Length: 376
Ligand SMILES: O=C(O)CCC(=O)C(=O)O
Ligand SMILES: [Fe+2]
Image 1 (cartoon, rainbow, N blue to C red):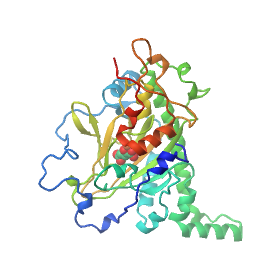
Image 2 (cartoon, protein in one colour):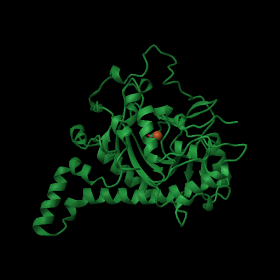
Image 3 (cartoon, rainbow, N blue to C red):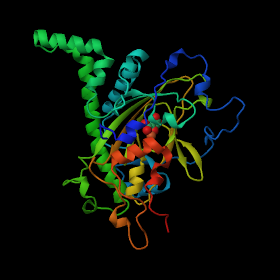
Image 4 (tube, rainbow, N blue to C red):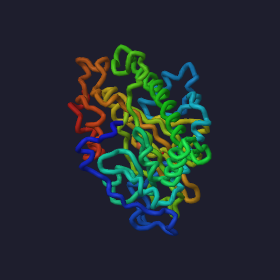
């Protein structure tokens, strides 16, 4: 993800109204998405009785390609197992996320996202489009998080500096927190980029797209130049979960998003004609959401999935989203193989940065603002 956002993005900041969630015995009105008397609010209507479930696909299955194609077309989301990401890495990332959000709120606020940057601590960027506050907090990482960590853990940092400059020796017990966290995040990003490249080919391959069709995937076709952000999310336990919203319905402005969720469910996806469907955590599994840019690339054949996160009364929930997109200079447009005399291109070319700016300004109308014509 571009670390320097466009003017549109900067012109639509999110005003921080951050709270110490642990201080609430009851759900404050500003967080209540329904009145107690509402039976069926359009925000919170659930599909808990629905028997359909999001496909879980074993990547070592020889049939994975058509299964992914079917999942992309019908859901725009699927879960993967046997994806090759070591479970120790996922556990470590969960531990890092938990450590970060356990800091006192005043400390976290010092590492707040600034106007000029995408990175840092804060409420969801989509907050300004909704009348109520969301029961969650997030931390976005684009590039190195060192500057923010300096604010989150100033003591460790200064102790590290003093030890380093005065004695010129690494003092491992003091550095452990920092070094471990930075290494863990870096390793996670590398592993996720590798998986994102693989998932891109499985997704595009299911449409008959080959390496010759996507030049920007690089000489090796591994999407190594793709850019990305890591979004850490924390949904504290909530005194009135049925009336609260962790993260409001949205589609991701990505090619695809790889989501790790801890063992507390909360993610729900919307399926056309069915409604909201919970995506239960699968041990060792990762959720793959198709984003708006993949919808454009597929010329509308694959939907970007509308999703939201609910909260829990007694358990906190953590998730780590790897938001994967194209290299910053690349304009995404419908792949030429999917366009022809009977299927005109449905969208005009757009860079990731331009798309993020439009999303910050127009939210769920962003996709249609790039639309050229309606399908035949
Ligand atoms: O926490 C989740 O399950 C969803 C997170 C999400 O949608 C996001 O970070 O964009
Ligand atoms: Fe999302």
